[in-house]
Length: 191
Image (cartoon, rainbow, N blue to C red; front, side, top):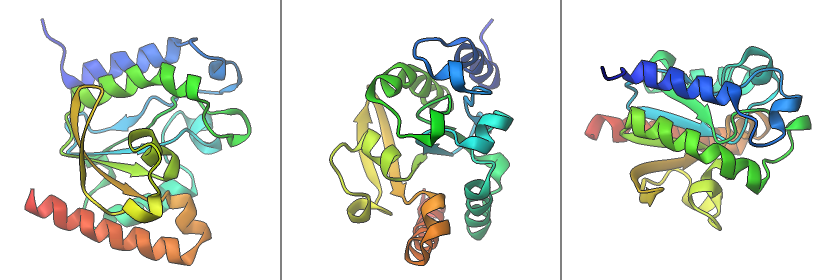
C-alpha cells in the first residue's frame, strides 16, 4: 500500500521530531518540520524557525508570518494552499545563523519534502535561504527573478525574495517584497 503525500509528509515530520543529528534539538522547544498543503503549487522556504515558530511548532507564525499572509492575499493565494518550511527544522539558540553542519543534516528532510510535494515554484525567503540554493549570489541582485536549477538531482524553479522580517524593518524592502509578490502572481497565472 502506497502512502498519500500527506502521510509521507507526516512521516518526514516524525523523523524531524526524532532527529538528533545535531545539537539544535537540545535547545529547541518544538521541531518545526513545515506545514501546509501536501499538493501545493508553491513552497516557501525560510532559513530557520524563530521564537514564535519554536513555541508553536509551526513555520512563519510571528510578525513575519502575518506579513507573509498579507502578501499572499495580494495575489489571492490562501495560506492553506501553500507549504511553508525552513532549511533548519529546529530553532538555533538566540536566532543565530544556521551553521553549515546543521544545514547539511537537515538537507535530506527538505529534499524529501520537495520530492513529495513537487511544487511548481519555490519562493526562498531571505538572503540565507537564497544562498542555500545560489551560493555567492546577492539577494538584492537576483530577488524577484525566476531561476531554474538542478539541486540535489531535483529540477526546481525558484524565485528569491527578501525575508518578510526585512520588510517589517525597512520600507524599501517592503516595497520590493510587494513588487516581487505581484511578479509571483503573474508567474502563477501564466504557468
